Length: 207
Image 1 (cartoon, helix red, strand yellow):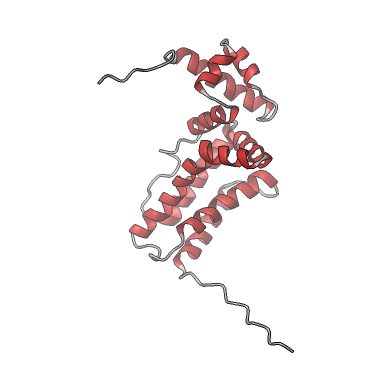
Image 2 (cartoon, rainbow, N blue to C red):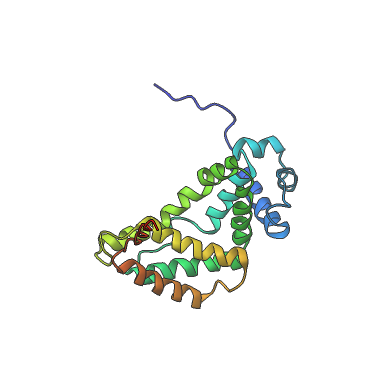
């Protein structure tokens, strides 16, 4: 049975015009000060055309971020965990300094703090898919035997992502090669250690 495609097919020329306009405006004005209306006007399309293809500004921002830091290329398999992490970080930092990727990520994170619904949108539109990059990176290392089978990949991924986001949002230290190498080395050390359990606080005896 033939599938029926509903709605007008996307025009490749209009798609590229919207993406180019959005990337330019996000880079110039920042995430919060860029509207879908302004993007549509700059691209020479109607506002409803943009909304038909990208339901929210965060959907459009996530699409541009994926172009600037492609999931399929950002974390090459070098054959070793430390160089995998360092290579991924260097690729990310290059994207952050050569275009609006850093501004997009910061804007998406800040916007997600508005409400529980905003957080869920952020996870669905951006975070959950991008986090697979880091969990896959540690999973490869576990399959190679570099880290214990008991290694907590979710925790290690959060440590890696959290360190990047802390410097990105706070701006207290640079996202540079030295940080990439240092973070990679420390994460390998953490991943290679057998996990420990938090000791229980002994019950206080009644006086």
